[in-house]
Image 1: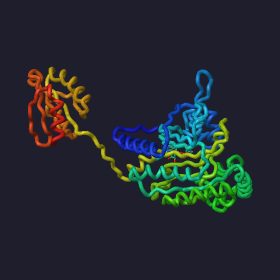
Image 2 (image 1 turned 180 degrees about the vertical axis):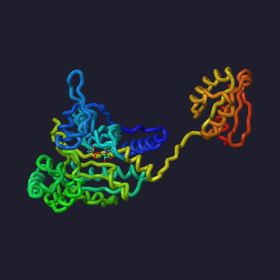
Image 3 (image 1 turned 45 degrees about the vertical axis):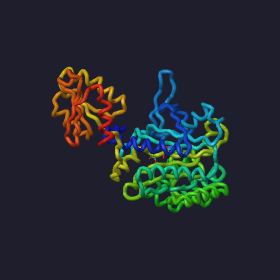
Image 4 (image 1 turned 90 degrees about the vertical axis):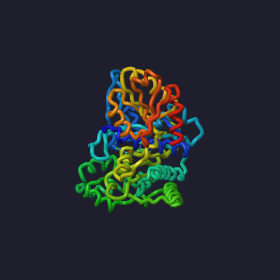
Length: 415
Ligand code: HAM
């Protein structure tokens, strides 16, 4: 579970700002749900045979005997909140986004953490393919604002309850005769979750998967037309994509479109930046009306990691800084109040009250890039005056303390 250190906050702030601005532009409203949820919500929602449920949940039992878990993803929690809080009676589509941590007990490695942050987006109540494409477009708007290029979408359709069962049977038949060649994990998964065999990363399983029947050839008309439309919309907005027949995603609720977004080049081999898809059956499964939905989530740790790896820098646009230097007991007392006055007047102020020498304090002002330094010494404190030093020209001027805010603002305006 990584710490986010001060030096990295600029990236997180920028990512947060861009996401908040764009989600507003795309008509999303923010929803925050608790970090703890009932275990059963995810067993039912994400699917009991998924890696997340089988081995990655942080479960706990409360004193009252409730079985809770640290959310491993947002989607079932958002649907729970949507159903419990009457959002289902709002005009649809209901577009919701969330920002926050998720928890997965994974083997930690670069880009894979036990606590990570997601920006999660859900559009509830529409079955139109244009929305699948619009979510992908939203991701590209976000990445463009962050100067991230060379990213590709991998996309597939995994059908629906009317076409998938027949395909599932075909797949089990195909794999049965090759069971001995599969890795142990796939041998075990063959019965409960055969689709997952298609995206196993083990060499021998990958080779076998290449000969496996492809779902894309067996889609029903509805799924076929939906998928075709999604791709046409992506073409329309010039978003490049790769059709990946092995992309099945690790969560059980998906129907029709599934997609992941990957960086191109060598960074891209291990980590997807975002993933999502359509889940037309989940709301009914969790006790609501039959309601289609589509969504995706961005892994913010990975997004920030890529921004840093690619050397992308963001300017910290700040107001000009005023640094307050104090010398002597009386000046120190006065400067505490003065600091607050300056700050409340809208100025960006810094100081180091615990340092007493002029040299050290001026050194700090210099390091912080202060435009002006205000020097309050023993004499000035007694005279009710203060010195303003322009850090570029070195020129100093003594002004009455009472006029300080006005004088500082004038100097900043003129400089
Ligand atoms: P997911 O593919 O499990 O989908 O996660 C989405 C993204 O979260 C991944 O592409 C990755 O960037 C990031 N992520 C996941 N686990 C970790 C980890 N351990 N460390 C770092 N980053 C990670 C979902 O969670 C779905 N709920 C998305 C969705 C929303 N589908 C429909 N609506």
